[in-house]
Length: 221
Image 1 (tube, one colour):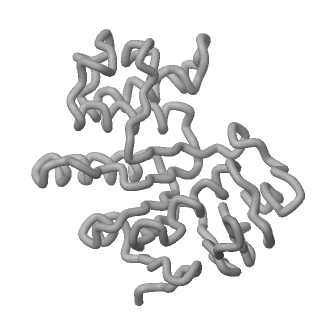
Image 2 (image 1 turned 180 degrees about the vertical axis):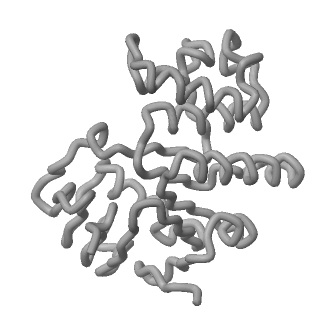
């Protein structure tokens, strides 16, 4: 049996004695996709922060490719060694860098041919070539989100985490972005955890949908 890409084992997380995640467990395989739903404050973002290695669990363990990544005592695997690409609700682009430098930032100043080829593909798919010399302040909301996605994928991560990435887009632009994201995820063979409160987005990206309830993930079907 193949080792899961991600294993969340009985994770417990509290803030000031408030239970946010309560003995939560699930596994994600290579090239698998899941969607996670839940209202604001239900623990969705906390779960992603634990997976990213930005916080430690109070109890339990997180494994990536079978290797311990986090436990209550240690962040064993540093965030930049987890092979993750992350897209937040806010694009969070570097304002002092043009778009080309923003996208290339994860791969450094001397990217490999493989990295350059991937970034060329991403720019082509997302129609970013006309934007490369512009700065973030000159972009629309939709353009900023496309750049954030390209930057998240530039280092060829194994797992993509998306936290409400399409918020504040109109319906037509959101649908266009969803189709584009799905194509890129499929073409590049990534695993995906897609977090949203929008059922239509969650169903579009995965039939494997979980609801965050009382600090646990409840499978929708």
